[in-house]
Length: 278
Image (cartoon, rainbow, N blue to C red; front, side, top):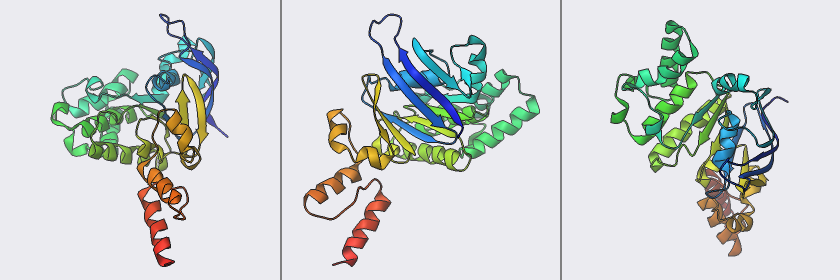
């Protein structure tokens, strides 16, 4: 089994703080896996994300990315080529006045030949559904479209793994939906490893695995069904469960025979089943 990210005993503190922000993190992420990390503000999610492409390095312990130790300064550039990051605010990530120039920025800095850059930019913009906007100014785009430009810029660098650090936090519901459709396609069809940090439980249900962080530690881990079945524990941690999971829980308390529900489709199937039995 090929692991693209391995964390062993990862602990981290910022230089101006005494307390550890991350505490004894042990984590392995398989090639092609879709992992979602949730947790309340200050739980250490974003700090963990920055260790995956060597923006931060461990105070104690070890992080390996594609077999490379992030503590080795000579490997930092290669790690960042192979792990793309998309952050919360798209306006902070766009560097050019034209969409296609922004997408070309990363490959240009990698020293990719001009003809290959043109090919990669066109492919990346088609992948995120923005090819027809290639000559537009980013300031003319919606928030969701800007984030798709940001992910196109990452794709043009041909990474093996994409880390999304609260990338949907500033988007409206439609923008989040459009963005997540692109992310799911990259994972399922292109085989990209996705590590997605989010506050939105409805996004977490789409993952292969969900990690829950609290006070710098991973305190829950499992499939979405396994994690969200622990609604009481999640509420203790200050987290919600998906709306339909909450509804199913309330219906079960009323005597309705329902399993754990995560998605709208699952709820429809179960309600149709119940109706057919009446």
